[in-house]
Image (cartoon, rainbow, N blue to C red):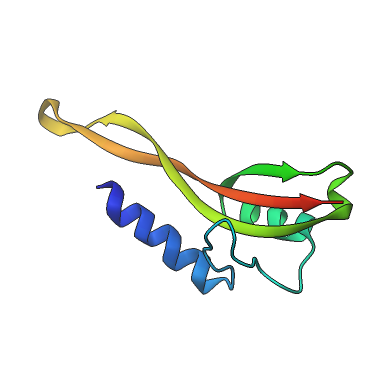
Amino acid sequence: MIKPVVATVAVSLAATGIALAAPASAAPSGQTARQTIQQLESEGYKVIQTKVGSGSIDNCTVSAVRPGRPITDLTAAPRGNTVEVVRYTTVYVDLACG
């Protein structure tokens, strides 16, 4: 059940123009770090930031956007069964600050 959700995250990020990248790969261009984070949050992702360097976010660039994992709950279903429901999905944003 988790694999389809991860695939959905990858497709969703790709559809919005934010490519999933390995840590060393380039991140979205044309946006500030703050704009990238706000866009991901507006799409429902919980953003986890990893920052290298010091300074405010206004002096950072996005070096990578990596998929996280879905956070789920078990919910009661008919006939005593349970269903795993995705509450939200995390995404990691790597920032290079100077």
